[in-house]
Length: 201
Image 1 (spheres, rainbow, N blue to C red):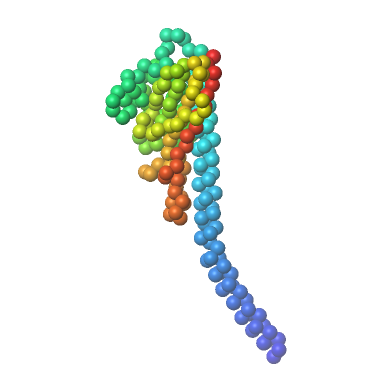
Image 2: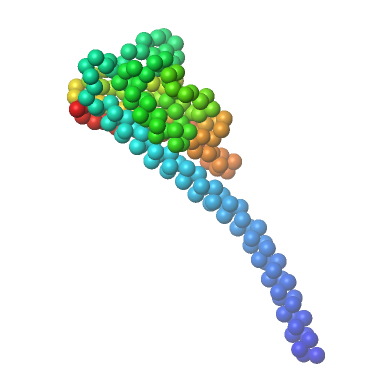
């Protein structure tokens, strides 16, 4: 009889323990789920930051090359409307070449510096680039964004390239998905911004 009583007691304890394990799982699951989302979102953000930083550096290197004196720095006509002078129809000046070099890298994270002479994809977020070379400034991309170049004013023998774009798009979550917005942490107000400078060759 004693052995039957002990078996029954052991079975009851195991049932109570399995209920406690299920309750622990229910409590821990949301925390683990949001931690997983945070790691996933942070990984996307780091890829975007690394790729964009490389794009800015390569854009500055492209603009620092010794170009033929016949090639002008910026031949876009500045206008009064938004985007006029920032969206060339032909890629035929130094500022266009800088934007194209940066586009090669930004395509990895589905961001582009929209220019008419290039394959435009309106589903991709548009970045804004400010290029200062030899004291002359050119702009490409989304002129509604504002970039604040960091560092001292460029010297006459320097090129300074500044890139900025929103970290997440409200329409499709590119380049960084906004998974944690449901938990009260949103990236919708954040943007990437970086400046690189190089000496002219």
